[in-house]
Amino acid sequence: MATLLLEKHRVLTVAPTGIAPGSAVRVISTLYNTRQELDRLVAALRQERGAFV
Image (tube, rainbow, N blue to C red; front, side, top):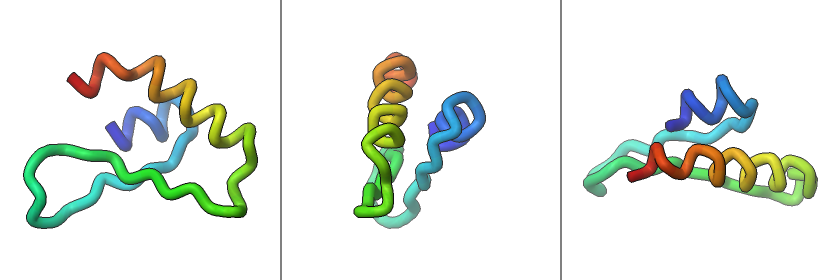
């Protein structure tokens, strides 16, 4: 999912590793993110939500 979001939507996320089972995408918004960047993230997640199932 992280690769898809980056290559298709230019949204950088991180695929976390650790002891928790299952797949996830970590998104960390900061004060440095613009509203437009967050809107792009939400649009990308809505468009690709079928990939989460």
